[in-house]
Image (cartoon, rainbow, N blue to C red):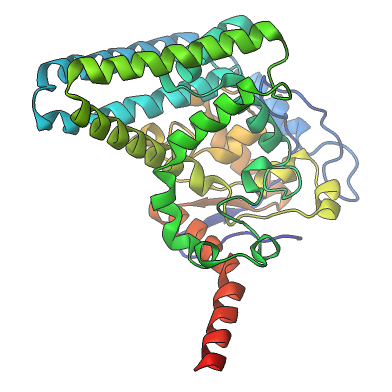
Length: 380
């Protein structure tokens, strides 16, 4: 198999393969060719079973309860900020606010995949409210980026999530880089504290840009107005509940914790998994593209809640429009299908998933560390 697949202690690897839907909006995309030498879709039988069991049916009531509870949680934190704003103890509330903000991000993500409601417009309104208004992150920018990720996960030429940036994901990308790349595994978690700010900046730039993903002037105006409302509302909340200096510290702490939480939810899903080159990507059908590049984290009530269901990354990539509460129900079907087809299905524990992801980032920087060591030895 081209590319690389993480294993390691604690990783459960089962066999399986299928072809699945594309990015946002549901089961878009063709079933295509399952694998080399096997015309026909390996995904079709699984899709048929999932549909027959009603796992693609919307769970609007489940989402309504969750979103309401999350909004009540945010309201409770804001009330606490107003009551405690005169004391430095208010900084403790940055922790629950970051948690509730991350929940808002998960609901925005699910709405973008049309998981929340059967009506596309309703999903758009929900996503705009959570992403743009509550988090200050452009919906259109995120959807465009995330669609491309879903279509070609871990493909260095097509997946924006593994494009060379502050972090790099292949030794080819690392060539010529400096100290940060040599030690990127150690810097990963500190860097994630900036993630919430980075998402805001990229989204704002995309809305302003004429070449951005917004398809019309009206869409850009709506996005921009909501982003502006978020910025002004957030600043007003901080400055009316606490003194300026404390407000600055609270805002920085909140955004850093939010970035760390989001980074912890996204990091283990694909890093260290197979990275198809252009030739292997053409041979893999949709099922192999999604399964071989994704890693699950073993389920549990706390894990499912903390990671927003993204620990079922394989099932999510195969069925992007599947409502979050159905992912765990689909997992046994997916695992069994994988086993029957002898396609690796990777699942590991919570801590082990981060070890594997960080080990991959460390491995990418190895040639740079070796070059540095040789240069030091020659200069000694």
